Length: 212
Image (cartoon, rainbow, N blue to C red; front, top):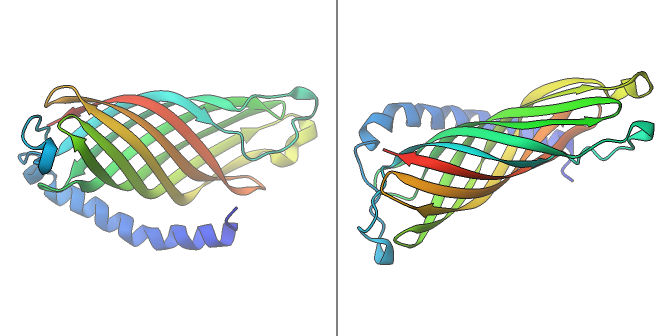
């Protein structure tokens, strides 16, 4: 596991890049929305979704870390994840930026509950395999928020944390029409917990994208 001090240093270094990416998305979004995706080779010209998209997704989140004894109260590790995002691929290229929000759900443990959500800014890329199927990848930073409540016996674990850390994901996209596609994704985000520092939260989701 990466030490917390290394992750904090990485997060601070990500802030200037994140700001530049937001500025780029804001300044080019209108112009790029008029461009079309023009893949080379076998993917050329059969389906041409717009370079800008909005997406909705739902699935399962894994909140199994931090790994700590649950005592007499037991607990669960799986939450229901929901996400929304807007992304833009730069004109006629297969890379761009995405801004999204994910609710990783709430799990019961420590005689209370643990809830995690976050806002994510990522560099994104796609690799067309044919006219209707793309592989996806992303790497970026997540501003995570954790809230932990417990019973009196585990009160030292209670509290909330906020802050930036890094994230990444992989996925696959099936183009159904020029405007609509289905996306399966797996992502990992590092978020800060009270007393234990940065820990991994992952989610596997199925979603839809509208391209324009």
